[in-house]
Image 1 (cartoon, rainbow, N blue to C red):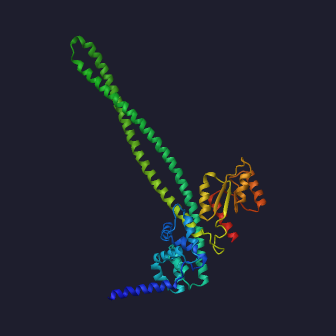
Image 2: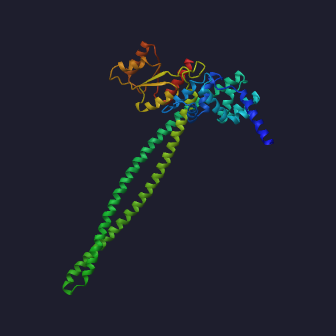
Image 3: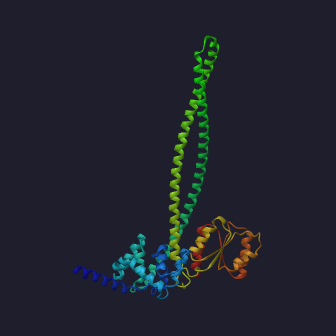
Length: 404
């Protein structure tokens, strides 16, 4: 009986703490997008929407995030499921931090931002009703700058992945050459063994005929000479076979070493690819906002904007697309070649909100034409010195900050 009373008291205390916190649809709009992005991973996005009985098949991560964000302005089925999931997930943080003194809580926040383990503290900070505005501004600014740092890490990780892919190609080519060489040596060894067998059979025949009559002495002498020559030949073939066998063993060892090295590099590649994917998702979770974002959101001016990139490296087009779409924008691309005239590029400029034009990997005619079209249709244009991912991401961030 006393144990049951203790359990009821704990449940009452948790309920009181939950009442001290805002619901997800009640917090400031600037915190809604970061809270959902930082506190729910992509699988948890899916869980919340499935519990709300939403159709989410074939939806991309940013579309899942947008569906939740579009329903956080009032109390509804999706916002209630998201609110309940977060309350349950951070129940321990609520019990520890919900009624903590404001200054003591802010000190806990500073330690969390240094260690990188901020999701639970950040959730409580967004939900508490008693934090002063200066504390909220500091917390929001720290999380906003953290997304910039993560973007730089994504760029470096992608470079490492590209370098590892080049190394993989070289090793695969070398391994293929070694396999061909190994196959050739095996064929030579087979031929050598066949020659040795034929020589042994011939020697046996010569020895069997050595007991013939004296009338065959001359033939026997001749056969002995041939026998000695064949023995010398056999000895040379055996030596050659031995050397080839040693060489084959060395090649087998080298093959195993290369296979182990290739496996290690592939494992590293997979790890780097997972890290890049997770970093891109973390950035898109913190930065991307849905259609209901307003001017208080840090990336409001970039959300749902169409970004056109003219020129650059065509083989990096998919990386440009990931970078723009992870920031919440819509992506268009033109390779800068003017063979088909200017009608196609003019249509792309007309429907775009921002045009990025790298000059180091582009034609002079394309740069000149794009400037002219932007002036004609009053479109924003940014001429970039480089077509690298860091240059593109810097232009997107700079454009977002200027517009804000």
